[in-house]
Image (cartoon, rainbow, N blue to C red):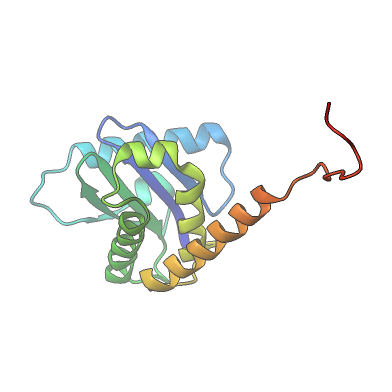
Length: 165
């Protein structure tokens, strides 16, 4: 099971933090700080896989990918494959790139709900739902169409019998 997905910048500011098992907010902040401390102290030429037992408890692994100014971090247990998680990060980033044309930190800040929707199409409740960025994009486009249609609905009916003066 995937326990958490964290996207943070290189200063440690979280841009997305989704925990799939309940954690109080204070504990979430502590975990995010611990993850950042562990990642920022790692050399660039080391593996993207880490044991996370000291941070998240027993049977926890962490995989991350560093893109420009962002760290994409997945925390999971032994029931998940490490390489599959690394690939899932790639799918997530590729899908965000398709949504925003070369995703950057500002895209994530100003389009938080879209990023959340992308993540929810890929992972739900700690389980992987979809691994194809093409399929995720189809779902996101459908959601965008529905949102646009719902925004076009007028709540005030047009009254044709009234005259304008």
